[in-house]
Image: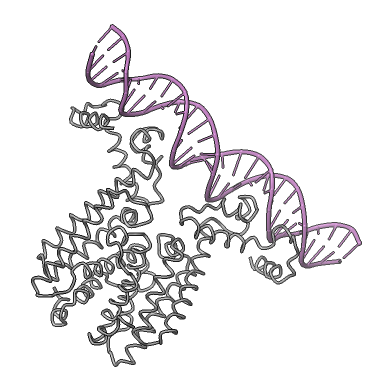
Length: 219
Length: 219
DNA sequence: TTGTCAAGTTAGCGGCACTTACTTATAAGT
DNA sequence: ACTTATAAGTAAGTGCCGCTAACTTGACAA
């Protein structure tokens, strides 16, 4: 195991000749191909065999690097959580940490991620039993929200439990993302502006005074 | 087409002899078997071939009744919406129509449905392209919520748009159901009481005064 | 130079969704 | 009551999938 890791490292840093070794770094190539296919077709539209074709190897090759199909997906789920966390952090930093606008921006960022990469989003939160690695990364995402909310509470002298509020926000934003993603809003309430929905509800769940709420919308 | 419908009708109402015809009513038998399998295994764990085995026919038989696998699932999705709507209506009637408790009960009923039949819930709101039939039934579900909220608003002299509030409630409850269903709460905030979560947030999204909110919890 | 072993290959298994062509049993017409 | 048209089954087969086993190849180290 450790040897495999070492070897791979060497190959990656080595000069990548025009037609290197057997493949070069099939592991990463397969992950990349899988990610592409997940984005192009849905989470069920993807097949391991497709990824192999794209990487230019036979369908037996992946099993030198992954135990099964699931293990490739897990890798993508884990990096998905990283991406989501970073994207959220960027969004909140832009609008100001510890502010309602900042927290709202985090929610909209979550929505953006879901809509941009629906298949990966579904895998991240869906039925796929996640690895402990992905588990930790998912937890990190929520922790960031909790911290943001705590920051906001301290700044505004609120005494409410930040974790509780963070869970409320997560729940709402996740619901909005799921419904938008699956086209359920479109079917049932066409024309709904989901950004506005999140912007309207975030202050309510934060327990912000209505005066703040009233001015929020034209932010 | 219409002939087939007629014929089936006759068979259903006819005396069901001990070993009727080729199968009796394979159509319904397949739907039932599919539903069972969806409940036992996940939405992906189910195979058409499994359903055939359970119904005691060959794997080619279903194609006399359904165009493809999707068409069976659509049937289940449609009846799922019926079940959800009825269950919600029962819940709200029990706690009192037009009251916060009633609306909260609807939300918890939604959650119950999702947790009790996760695979069917995922199909209903998930990636499966729904038939126009299921579309209408999904819309009906939300309409009931809108009506309940409107009822509440009239009763309490609120002027807010009932549809807007209904969408907020739907979004939150759907998010809570999804996260609970997929085990995401358990991974990230273990021990969370989702019923309480819904009961806490519902009045907030209804725009209920905080005095009402304060007394709500021990309802 | 040569031996080792990771990382490819080929070939094949069982299972799936779905199709085609054939068979059977019933309901309808005379 | 006998025939007949046809709905509703079966058998057999296609191509694709995930995955395995047994082999070959080739980079690197002794």
